[in-house]
Length: 222
Image (tube, rainbow, N blue to C red; front, side, top):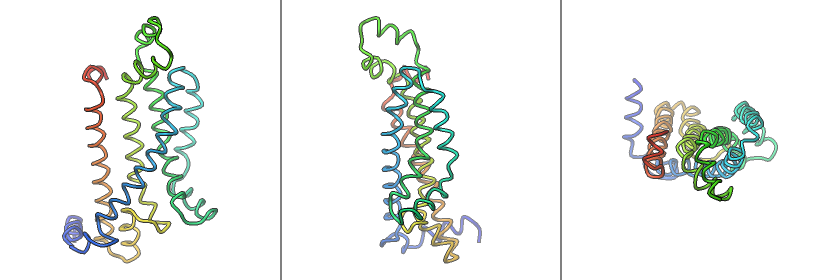
C-alpha cells in the first residue's frame, strides 16, 4: 500500500469520526493544548519584547535567552518533568511554552527596533507619552513582524503538541503513538496528516488575521 492509500483508508473509516478516539475529539484536544500554550507564551514574551524594543535595551540578553530556549530538548524536558512531578498537563505546557517564547520574544523586539525613528521622534515632540508612542505609533508599524513571530510560535506548538500522547494525554499524537504500538500504519499516517493539515490551517488563520489587523499602508511598507 502506498501513502495515499493509507491516508484514504484512515479518513474513510467511519469509526475514526466518532467516540472518544474520533478525529473531532482529538483535533479539539490538540487545538486546546496549542491555544493554551500559545496564550501563555504570548503573555510572557510580548510584554518583554515590546518594552525592551521600545527602549532599545536588553537585545543581547534576549538573544541569549532565545538561544537557550531553542537549545532545550522538548522531549527530554517532557520526560524530566514527568519523572519529577508525575503525569499531567503542566508537563506538556512547560516545554511547549519554552519552545514558543523565543520566536515571539526575539521577533517582537526586532519588530519594535525596525520602526522608523523619525515617526517616534515626531510623536514625542508632539508631547505624546511613552505609552502613547508605544501603542499608537510603534505597535501598529511593528504589527506585521510581531504577527510573524506569533505565527512561528504557533506552528512550532502545533507540530510539537503530539508529545502530549507520550504522557497519556490526548491530541493528534495519540494516533501516532498508538498506531506505532499497534503497528497500525494507517493510523500513524492519518495522525501525521492531521497535524500537517492543522499547521497549514494555522498559517491560513494568521494570514487572515494579518489582513484584518494590519492597515494597507503598513502592509505595503512591510
